Amino acid sequence: MRVGDAARLGYGLALLADPQGVARALTGTGLDHGEQVAARVLGVRHVAQAVVLAVDDRALARRAGRVVDLMHAASMLALAAWSPRRRRIALTDATIASMLAALPLGHQGFPQRGS
Image (tube, rainbow, N blue to C red; front, side, top):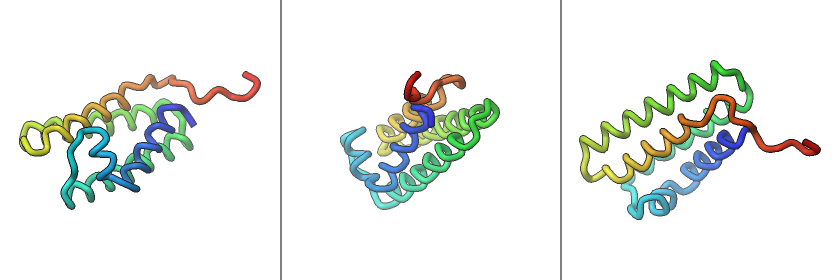
């Protein structure tokens, strides 16, 4: 598994386990019930994407994942513009999605033993 995929997996699992804690750690603000549900759905998406990319490491799969991340970032920018109350969490999530999308397609995984 590549380093970026492992980070995505960890982030997704954290969102599933404690969306409120993740939000407080990243933004200093909490989530209402609906936002917690949305964060858990996002966590499922991140876990699924990490698993798919661990199994299918082809450039096409990575490009498709990049498109999904960029679409998510765009939707969070739209939410930030539309909802001042959700602006901080939306901009934080857009930043994370953009960072994940920016990982190089040829990004290497963890060093192998003896390499």
